[in-house]
Amino acid sequence: MTLHFPGHLFPGSPPRHPLDINPRAETDPPVPAPGFEPRMLLLLLSMAFLPFAAAFVLPPRLHAVRVIRGQEAPLGSRPYMAYVRIGSTGSCGGFLIREDVVATAAHCNCNLGDIFVYLGVQDLKKPDQNWQRIRARRWIQHPDFNNENFDNDIMLLKLWHSAELTEWVMSIPLPEANHHVSPGSECSVAGWGWTGVNTTTDKLHEAEQEVMSDGLCKERYKNYNPTTMLCAGNPHVMKSAFQGDSGGPLVCNGVVQGIVSNGKPDGHPPSIYTRISKFIPWISETLQKLS
Image 1 (tube, one colour):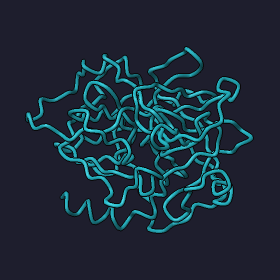
Image 2 (spheres, rainbow, N blue to C red):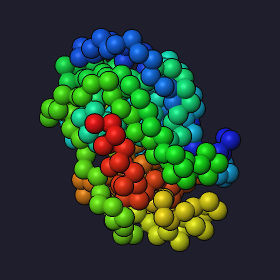
Image 3 (cartoon, one colour):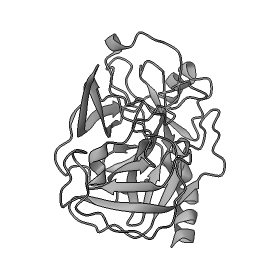
């Protein structure tokens, strides 16, 4: 979706205070981690609630969004999901790609304070023994990220220490370099957020997303770049990533193919995702440097 604040990002939302109580949290070294943009919450919305029509990006801001017309994700079904808390004012979505590295959107960066990654979370208000909280030691934004049109919207977070891989916490496979996801492919997105107007939820929700043709997004977004961006969300289904959970994964057949980036201010699909396959060389090079 494209939220047009200064750019086209989905606004994020304030972190939930229950996250301060974590049975698995460890005492990390007092090294300040670079902060980044507030939370982007996934919203699968019904167009009846938002009559607006301006284009906007999913910039992490302080507004929570909702997952409308989605459903609660089965317990433990998405062990790669990461809730990224930025300082005390915001958060984004993300996903584990290596035991010590989480991928998210570059537009989530706004230096709001220490960054903590929460793994193994199903319900933000119910900490349990499956949770793992790890501070981010570094963040590496793609050097060519453009905060005007959100091209190259990808960032990696280097964790202070490796996550413990369990049935609740696992990394997700990356696609092959330059792999093209065919239009019509069935994928899905997930996140923590609202489920309707004035109705919130702290449980992980998910919704299906159909990959659309590049031509459709070119018609609707003047800055759409098919080389680095992926178009998803059937305009006739009215389910789409929205404000909140920017940085979350678009998963197709068990492989992460996109990162929630931007879309329309009213949440009308299709939305724009970062095309991960384009960045495999950069990801590989960066991971090697972080080893």
